[in-house]
Structure formats: C-alpha cells, structure tokens
Image 1 (cartoon, chains in turn purple, orange):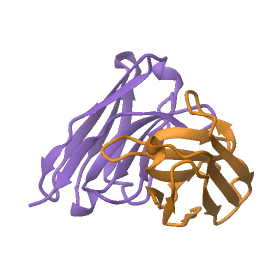
Image 2: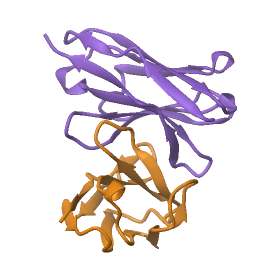
Image 3: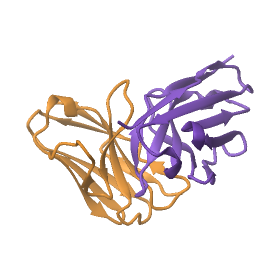
Length: 117
Length: 108
C-alpha cells in the first residue's frame, strides 16, 4: 500500500525556521516526482515545491529563496527546509506523489505549520 | 502562470440528483487536468486525471470531460459521502502547478 506520512510541523515565530519530513512507503520512491502542497485554514490548495527523481527542484514564487526541497532516496524521504518564515506561511503542508502523467495520486495527512509571535 | 477558475463557488444539490462542476483555465492546458475531492479534516483525494480518466477506486458516478480551457466534473446520483469540496488542477505548464479555488458541494 502506498503511503506518505508528514512530520515536523509546529509553532514557530516569524523569521524562524522549520524542517518538514515526509516518509514514503509501498512504492519505488526514487522513481517519482514528489511535491509539497499547502492549505491555509479555510482556503484552497497551493502548490509549494517539487523535486524530480534526480533532485531537480521547482518552487512557487512565494517561497523561492526561502524554502529548500530535498530528498534522500535511500531513506525514502522527502524534506522541506523552511527559512525566514512569515505569518502567511501558516498552513497545513501536504506531501504528495506525482504520477508520470503529472497529477498527484497519493497525499499524506498533512502537518500543521503555525507562524506566530 | 495559468489561472484556474471554478464555478460555482457553492453548489446545492439534493441526494440522488446530478451535480455539474466547471473549471476554466486562463490558457489551454490540453487535457492535463485533474479533479480532487476534499472532505473536512482530510487530505485531497484524486478523482479524475487527464481530464476524463477515473482514478483507481473511484466510483463510476464520477466522470470528467473537456479539453483546452473548459472542463467539467459530473457526479451522477449524488450520495451523502459526495458532499465535499472539489478542486481542479492543471499540470500542463509548470511550475507552478495551479489549482482552482474550489467548489463546495452541499446538500440541498
């Protein structure tokens, strides 16, 4: 069974840092594009960042230069290093697997990041 | 950046009836369009990919159509578990992937 499980969320002050993790199982992790998608309370879905099997990375304009996505294929793990956090980054962050078509077919349960003083 | 616009924002339909949700792209996305369902407190779930292909385990009452800039999600014979928020997403031109703002399907 395909599973992705996020961890690492919490409360952080503006300007602070946080590292999210996503542990994958049930599929060949190293073969897939993986992504982070966030959702502020009561709002829609916002794509944040993605990474290819070989480590090529992609970012939304709102996080470029502040967030860094990475993966460790040997550990079936995806990460999101978030620096210079802002109140507007407060959201549930989901880890998602992309199919070869490009849609996101498996999502984790999400981890809540709250940026507040 | 491609902007995805969903309509209506809220749709009220009675159980057993048909619901039709719309999604429009600001430029052509070919058929690279997915639909997701999200219930309160849950992660999104993939329903439709490539505009009209039903994802694994999704009931046949869900169907998608369209290409280019106009897309439709149809749910026939609505059941109680279908009342949720639905999002469309384009993956034709990325980054960034972009989602619509969502349509809330509520019980009439």
